[in-house]
Image 1 (cartoon, one colour):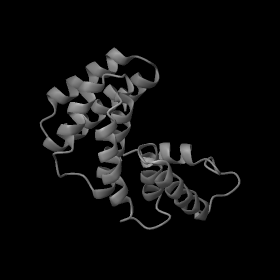
Image 2 (cartoon, rainbow, N blue to C red):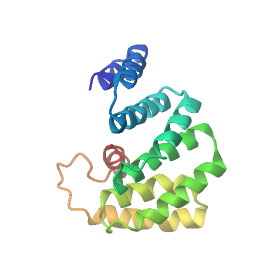
Image 3 (cartoon, rainbow, N blue to C red):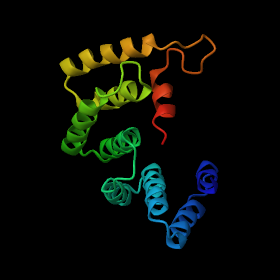
Length: 163
């Protein structure tokens, strides 16, 4: 996607202009929602937190997403709330994500990563217990020694939270 290229090459103004122009020209409601989601991600990465928060809130009001995509969006919103220092809101979001994480099978990447991203919002006893569970599930994955993710939960989760 051209917008992602602009972001990767640090051409933020061009990326934002492209997203906004595409949003204006798109007639399909579902496409508009996806563009708003990408724009929210863009705003979060460029630290325009309030704009991102508004867009994530608007996007989450729609019912076009699969359950797994919805969880990934909620994880992105959780990361935004953490970056904004919104402790109460991020803790509430983390608890909601955590409840839903258990709906996935034990070695599901989405379950592992949902739990991983909620860790900062938990008290130390909960955090220690959950981290052990995350590690146990992650270690049950059959990853070859050549795997990019071998013994690296952080990179594993960064890749697996993409829509």
